[in-house]
Length: 339
Image 1 (spheres, rainbow, N blue to C red):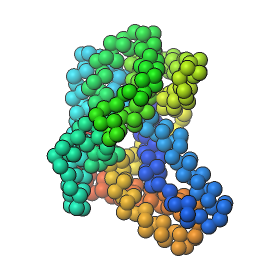
Image 2: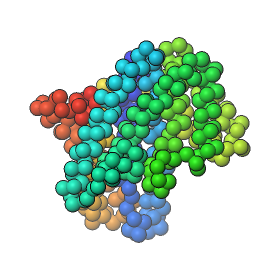
Image 3: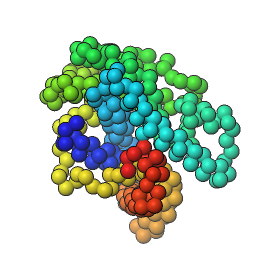
């Protein structure tokens, strides 16, 4: 991978992770609004954070994961890449689930063996560390789909039609595709971001053989196809746009030189692992203090999210610094080598 992309991915991934944290911070109740304007601003902030940016950030992670896996992937090195995904995805996933399971038990929650197995391995809502549903999903994608995609993407044109067909079939049979009990699974989350993974994987398979412009033309052609078929499949163009945006961002959006190679990016995975617990710890007191100073739901919403994010970043930078100094091997295992 060229230097530009290698430096760009950590920057954008960190920003996307900040949006994940923003989403999980949630908004104060509209009942706290002190005026009609305050109510509108509070609602607008909530709609912005929970709308397209939230869907886009997870599509980014799915697309980039697929892109990085299929870059230089072949049947000769498939076994090695799967072994790497065991170390970087499955092992951290299991370790963090154990940590959060113990935390949950210490907090007085009870778990049966069936609950533990089903929620960690069978896609039931939610594993002890709920945010890590993505980690387990992309590991399963790597194991299940890599041999199939390798065959389909061997030829550029066949790969393009295959990728489009998989996405169309997903939307056609959307309501019938799920895993396990139809009421208690997160298959809907997986289906939502599967198109981004497919397009990322397809573009990754082209990366060594095609120019940037050629890859972008392929991405644009997915949008054209979606526009033509939008009348047949509801919201196809909108969904396809979300699916292709991560690759377009990767190749088209520059990042400033000053933003590259910052130490804080080493904490992205730790932020992902800890942010929900830290939000539950920090957000309530922060918003109570803000509302006491400035009675405004919108101020409490926006400023509260910013302060909470800054605290979460600071805590995780501290954790990273301490573990790097005293337990570097543990840090490496817990982060899948992302430290």
